[in-house]
Length: 370
Image (cartoon, rainbow, N blue to C red; front, top):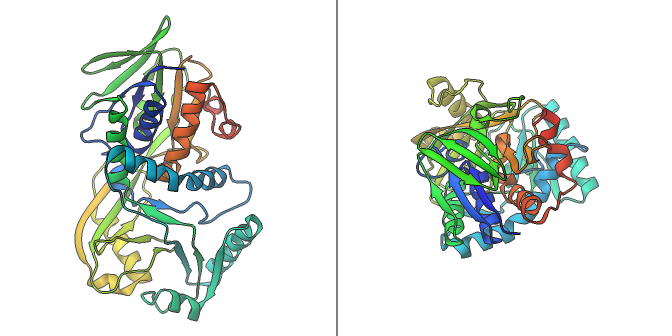
C-alpha cells in the first residue's frame, strides 16, 4: 500500500525508517532542524553493536537488540549497494573486563545467560585476558569475550541511509524545526518554522526533541528526556586494540584509521550540548585505567550527543493509540544504532502492510497514553 509519509527526524533511526519505507514504494519526506543528517545523538555515537553486554533473561531490550543484530549483515549490504557509499562495519567482537570479584560475578551471570541462549562466549581468567588483549591493565582479573558483537560507522551509515532513501525517491527537508502535528480530515499536517507539510502518515523519530513537539489531541507529553553523552576521539599509536574493549566506566572502539573512540558519559544536563572539562577528564581517566597505553594517545576531538531516554528504558515504537496515522519511533537511548534496522522493519511492516509484530507490544506508545 502506497503512503505519503513524513518522517520527523534525520538521525540514524529516522533515516533508516525513511529508507525502508521508500524502498518499499512509499512517498517519503524527511524533515529535520539540522544540517547535515545525523547531527543529534547519532554524531556522538561510537556505533557499538553489543546487545549481549549485561544480558539478562526477560529483558525486552535484549530481545530487540539480538533480533536487530541478526539483521545487520544483510542491512549493511543492501544500504551500501543502494547508496554507493562504503561504510565501516566490523564484527570483531567485544571483550568485557573485570577488575574485582563483583565484576567477575556479573560477567559469569552474563555468560550463563548466553550459554542458555546458545551464544558463543568465552570466560577468561587474568592470564587469558592478558593473552587475548595485551594492552589491558595489570589489575584486570578476567574478561568475557563475545564474538558476535561489533561496531559500525554511525555517521557514515546515517549519510548512506539518507542517500539510499533519496535514490528511492525520498525528499530531505533540512533546517526546518517541527513545532506541531495536527490531523485534518484524512491528512496529518506537520507545522514547521518554515511552513507546513501534508501527508497521510507521520513517523515521529525526533529523538530527545520528540517531547517538544505539540501533537493535537494527545494530552500526554512524550516522556523522553535528553541524556548527555560525551565521546572522545583519540589518535592511537602502536599496535591497535583487537576489538571493542568494555569496562564498567567506559568502552573503547579501535578504528581502521588508527584512531580510538572512547565513550561515553551519562549526564542529566537537559538540552545542554557542550563538551565539558569534567566529562573529558572522566573519560580519559577511565580509558587510561583499563588500557594504560591510552596515555600516549593524541587528542583529536570531543563529541556530544543527547540520547533520548524513557522512564522504563525501553524505546517507543509503533502506531499511536490516539492519533490515526501517527507512528512513534523514539526513545532508543543508547541503542539507536543497534536498533535502527529492526525499528525500520517494524515501522514499515505496520504502516505499509498493517502487520503489527508481537514485539511491538512491549514498546507500544499506548503504555504512555500516546
